[in-house]
Amino acid sequence: MKPENQAWDKLFERAAALLPTDFADRVFRAARAGVGAAPSMLSQFALGAATAAICFLAVAVFKVQGTHEENNRAIADWQQIASSAEDSGFMQ
Amino acid sequence: METSTTTALVDLVRRAQRGDESAQREIILSYQHRVAGFVYAMTSRSDSVEDLAQQVFIKMIRAINGLQAPAQFESWLFRLARNTCIDHLRRQKLRRIFLPFAPEHEDVPEPLGAVDTEELDALRYAISQLRPQDRALLALVQEGRSHAEIAETFKTSVAAVKARLHRAREQLRQHYQSDHET
Image 1 (cartoon, rainbow over the protein chains, first blue to last red):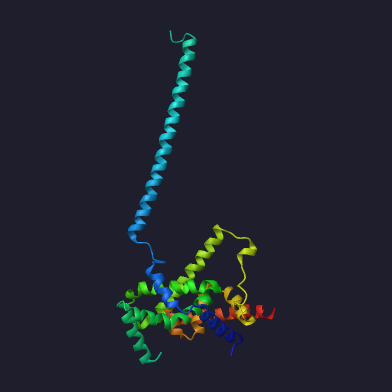
Image 2 (image 1 turned 60 degrees about the horizontal axis):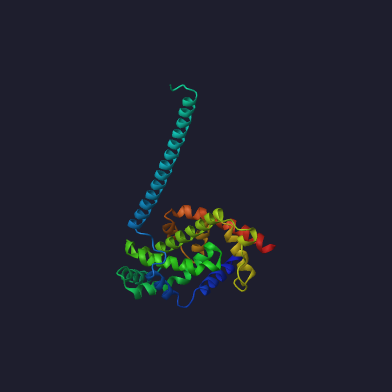
């Protein structure tokens, strides 16, 4: 008999003792409660679509906000140029 | 396995496939200790045995309808158990990457009384040093599965099983002796 064989027997005995006496009942209860159930295709698709929509919305919001700030900056710059041109009599 | 035992198992599996809960319960009662032993050998942790064994049987209940050959039930069940344990070990590995614990929290010792002998402790250490595939191989051999049955479980050839088994046994013996002698 190999030296570790006895230890293997003990390992299997120990593992068997770790299960509660109502293990089978617990399995059925967990199965009915949906524990460990794989998500359906529809729910996975819905989650993917929701994630994509949120990403798209975030990109759109940042883009619109960025463009708006850029326009405001450009208008302010032009106003400054126009007023300094007016002051120097260049516009007359 | 004897012919009468095989026939009885096939009948039981067919009943379970038809949704007969008493047949499913009978299967769980017949295999729960073997699956628990396999899970313990794969994970080396007593705190995950019940949870993982439960997952294996829940998967079994949900997927048994898809089993084409009821005579191959045992190989199929242990393949399910092996995949469940490997998924669990992978998740643990990923968790360690994203949520690294301090070294003292990483390897929390088993609670008092959980490991009752030095031999068992040494074996658990030796097994934990092996690859999950090799742990599964050794656990199946140890619980009396033939090379042909293991080849069926692993979807590989008998020759490949023998070669891997030889290597795994050597590695196990080295780790077992090194821990046992210290």
